[in-house]
Amino acid sequence: MRISRNDNAPLSYLGSPYTKPCLDAVVTLLQGGLAIRRADILTATDRHGLLLALEADDKVAVKSGFASGYVGEAPRTFSYVLQLLREHGAEIDEYRVEPALLDRLDRSALRESDLSMIDGATPVRPMRWFDYILDAHRAAGRTKTLWSEFPPVVPFAIVDPRLMDLALGFWEDPDARLTDAYRRLEDMVRARIGSEEHGANLFEKAFRNRPTRLAWPGLLQAETAARTDLFKSVFGAFRNPRFHRELAHRPDALLSELLLINQLFRLEREAVKVPEVE
Image 1 (tube, rainbow, N blue to C red):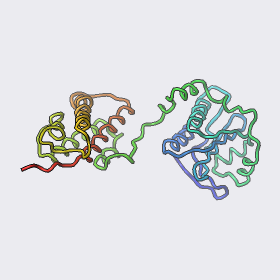
Image 2: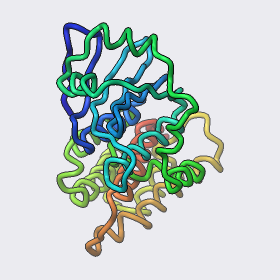
Image 3: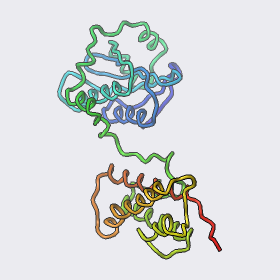
Image 4: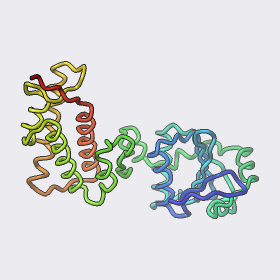
């Protein structure tokens, strides 16, 4: 996705005159946690661009890869993007503009006068942008399934540092990365408690057997038992099948498993070694 700056107007430009890059631009902004406060639809007949107002009054222009008025990918994508913006709380309005303005938008060359014209223009009334949204996308908004089309993205901010190398290359070979993560976790626990056990027996010995080797300060006995069972359950439900046979999973399921292992890494890091009693 290319971001360019223009000397004439204080804008960043995203997308292209084609549909997919414009969809990717909006999804990337939302996936990145940027709040889109306002979305102005710039309409020239059946072509549409977007002028987005972000936090701190930053403005981003999305090029005219959207369309309406016929059955096709561009109108379907425009419908999806508008419903996404609605669900994320953006205030939406529509403005009629000349085709030449969209041409300048697509060249990353909007002028200050273009922005002033839009600021002073009267939005389309009665509102018709609701009509651009398909019933299927309205329904997906109600059922909160609209985001299922988002690409699965590794949230690096919460990844345990000891997993980061595997997370960085995760999509190159998810099965190998997950397998390495399970092995690494076992190796770390074995090294900390001086054991040759593996799997459920290793975690029982580390966290629950007496004398306790690793403990979470301040936890009740029942909470410690529950965390120990979590380690055992994850290995039983996910690690063991993965080690014994080839598994085919959707990307979202693979990413969910990585985050599950990551939580075990974080819990292991919080556990402190209990001094041995002589």
